[in-house]
Length: 448
Figure (cartoon, rainbow, N blue to C red):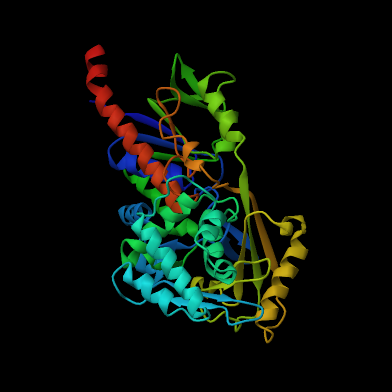
């Protein structure tokens, strides 16, 4: 049986994951990426003489598919990440803040111990947090019907300060959606898989290198070693439909024939690829109407001796939510501050936003000198809004036409819009293609 020919449109993490899985299984894979580098939205950008990430990311030990594919393509975890047990520190402008550290106990005992011993929370606040976790565990982290995270926390009578220091920052960090809109069911799934199954799942994996070196570059080399092709600077102008099936893509004046086409592009970009009429265009229009959430990353450059004293620090009561010390990257004095979701900060220009974030850090670290250079990266449509009942609206990997496949963190992976969600979608898509190709193979051979 001849191997299936697969065209993958998009060289982000979802498209690369699909291509790696397909190439490893022997498929003939061609990845077409419009940019001059692979990685999609999770890529590196220049800042003065440095290279930084197009948005600060943090991985955890529960990213099973991402870590598996990294090992497959030859990424060494020890040289790429600094793995540390779960530890969260959140600073308040006034007040003790929060310090939560998980001991090396089996899950979920490590979480119970971390909450019971959390510094900065009153005895009552710790009891409410523990009681919520116990009730969620008894329900299998499942809800009879979805609701917002805010409604879930109110129903379980979580104190305001506990919500402000722990639950709402975790919700915004993982779903990039404010608690009043965020899906409680997706949030509980994140808590279950990240905290309640294995202790190592909650480990924090701080990058030592930029995101391009963490997976995309190695994935590109792996695909090519296994006989595939990764073509950069190749913008696909449309798909080729023959009857009720996709059978290729158009790149400039060229038509690239394929048995299967993986559309690994953002949902709002599908309209530009789909035929003007038909089921794929209908799906593309539905997806284009999904609301999205932004992420801003503010890089502030201080003298090299300035440090947070830890890789990550939560920020309460200001614009920024999480600060990252880039010293692990060899970029001493560079602080990245993440501002997730919608908010009044979007009305500020870059200089004003950087000044506001710098002032927020100065209130917490009054001895720091003023920062010098700054870089603000705005991703206006960084993620889909992970709203209540979002799982009902997410499409699976099989598109509305034969030979049409969808890969991206917006598809039905059960995860929010994270790197793991993107990789899992690509793997899910590739496995579905291989299953279909095996089923179609004998029939195609008999027909020919």
